[in-house]
Amino acid sequence: MDENNISINDRIFVGQLLKAVRLGNLCVREAMIRYPRDTKDDSLIAAYHALIHYEADEDLRLRDPLYKEEQDDYLEFIYQTLEKGESLPVNIINNYKDFYETAPILHEQNIKGFWKSFWKFLNIKEDN
Image 1 (cartoon, rainbow, N blue to C red):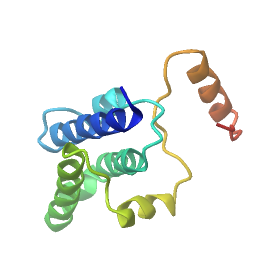
Image 2 (image 1 turned 90 degrees about the vertical axis):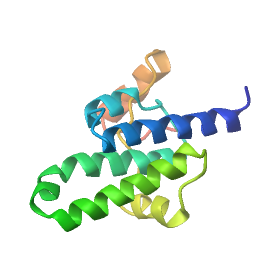
Image 3 (image 1 turned 90 degrees about the horizontal axis):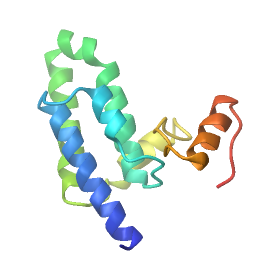
């Protein structure tokens, strides 16, 4: 299977995860556990940040119906785009890149993943 197909399949899968979260069929924590590990896809990294923000803003969404509607629409746009296997718009990707060097996506459960987690724990940037 070529890498483009893997990326497209991962995008579709993440779109389905985000949709399940948005519809209340899956909690954010479970979606984060199921998220594709060690992804280099900028769209999936941005979507991961959107998922984290969705969880972090839960109290705000309860207090502000307009904010809830806007955030729900934003997450829906992201999952609908990813479910088609498409890349997120550059402005969405760049919004997260401006603030975050990387996303706290889980690593593979193998020796390479162990070392990635270890270096991250020590706060040392690894070379890929």
